[in-house]
Image 1: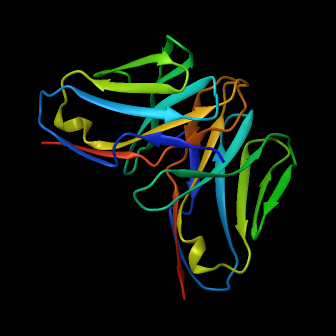
Image 2: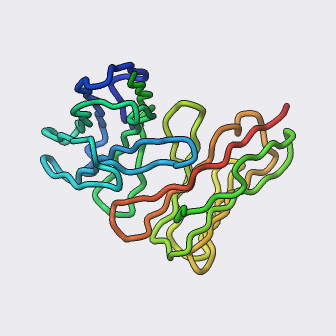
Length: 113
Length: 111
């Protein structure tokens, strides 16, 4: 069975803190993605990675960075959390073909106070 | 403006009724993906459509992609409370890994 896990379901952080969100997939997928989901805006792509140590900016990369040191793990980093980064964060992975469907983790609801 | 429009935004139906959700793009779709999301949780993959005119079914859910590959519909037959949730369409419009998503349709099924 396909499995994407995220390190936390709920997270509360203070403004200015450095925040790490971890995602692990067990499907040996090449591609991994980080999205944020906000009411009325849908899912927006932050970053994606198509191979270990490779990354590409999505539509809203500002204020975020990513790390992929191992194939199964993709981390999203908020260097200095701000209140406008309060959101639901979703990780996904997919196989090597561009049209392969993406499989999603359960999400992390991050609140920055 | 949203590149992928979903309609309706929300839907309340009586158990046992049929319903349809639409997803429309102004661009040709390389792939169209339907997901279901329970409130506050991740997305569950339902179906993928790639070819114009393609139709797929899973249990009581049927999805179609039109011939021009710009519109898809998701049809639920004899709805049940377990069908409740948010249905999202996602699409590949560039032939790369980058998907775009609609804003979702919230479905409530009354028992």
